[in-house]
Length: 356
Ligand code: NAD
Image (cartoon, rainbow, N blue to C red; front, side, top):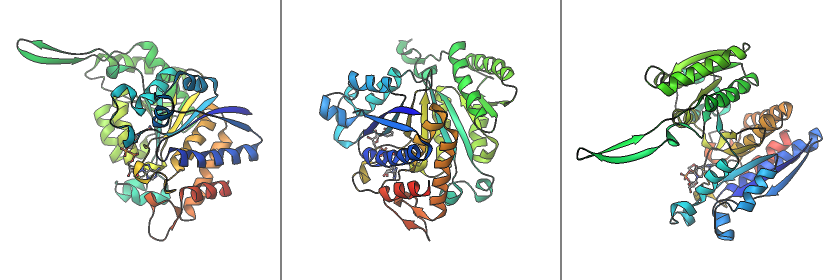
């Protein structure tokens, strides 16, 4: 296959971790006979410095012209004093909107080699943690009407939480299709005992579940889900939910794995083009020191291969290579443990390429 990948190295550790992901992509291309070309995109602080804005239109156009987009991270103290609209993070919001990305997929996977980093009890961790949160990204209360008014002499604030059937159906399809590429199980999370949006959500999900008889389906209330994620996370495969519930549950889910540098994510809209990035930020405290853990970015590139390009075998090969390197005791500083060997960011990338 030939694929054009827009590459946003960004700020802080972004350029270091993206360089390692590209090493791995090139190794995959060589081994499987693919051609990946890279189009460099300026976004975030680096774009503010160079072009005066966090995502110039020409840069968004490059992303729209690519088959998919790989991002390191943006932001840093240098740009913290800028007004809201000019901040690096605005580039990310503009990119998501410009690419029409309405779903965010975040795997919560515990690498057995890093089990000690989980804040959960060993007896829970031993059952395994490997699920993915599919969060609706452009609807619900974050995008509804917000107002604060004075009623009878006191302030009253209102946030409206709208959802249409079409918005629910398209995220639901992403969840069911994702489950078909995993362990064929969807848990749909809502608050149907209280909210109208949740009752509509549930009815649309039930309609979809009938179309995917090969996928096991369950409803779960959001309060119960928050408890189950810490009590027995092994029960989950794909968890699908609306924007605000997903915001909260996906952070809870990534915490239980204990290693921020290891977690990839993807955002998808219509079609196969997506945005793939690690969940962490630009880590200004370790930027430029070749210390960062590149695995979250490498696994984001792996997700791109699987979810945007349909390259299942290549995805599995990268995952297996990460396993092999962790088994060999190689760790970057953030996940260093007794008996392991500390490596730099670039040595970690090299080791994963060697294992491939
Ligand atoms: P952060 O995730 O950058 O860092 C939190 C801590 O985790 C730091 O101690 C950092 O050194 C460590 N860390 C993060 N990634 C690591 C990695 N790959 N390897 C080793 N250690 C790692 O969060 P923050 O400090 O709150 O934010 C720093 C900047 O990043 C801010 O400007 C913030 O706005 C931005 N940010 C960007 C994104 C994004 O680009 N998607 C996401 C979150 C934060």
